[in-house]
Length: 164
Image 1 (spheres, rainbow, N blue to C red):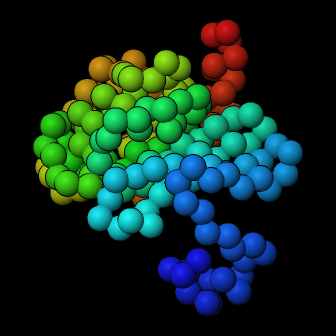
Image 2 (image 1 turned 90 degrees about the vertical axis):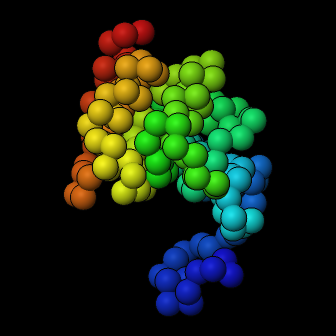
Image 3 (image 1 turned 45 degrees about the horizontal axis):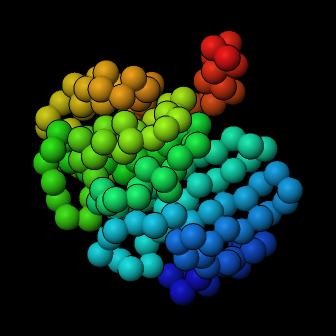
């Protein structure tokens, strides 16, 4: 709340700050849980949005840490901020290898993962080759963010139902 400008607060019905581990229920079928991050901003959080039993996770800016897989376990869709390619480590940020490590550590893999917050090194390494590498190593559909990208998750969910 302290970081949200009054102009934007005035547009909201509810503004409730959360810290990692806290959950806010909007209704019986919609909730949001704040997840832990390791970032230079100590108030930084990720989240898991649950809508009618479907979970969408967002890592925010973070580096890989022990326990991150548990933060997002059970998410059907997972959005990673991934600044760097391969195993090119930068403190407080994810690399492609960190994405792979996180997804591989999950008991139940997501239906799809989305990669956003792509840095210049990621782009210069070849975004398509990075996407392909992540998808091949994890076995999970991997989609890179692009300006104007829209994804119909109902289509992805229907594919899941056909597999079950």
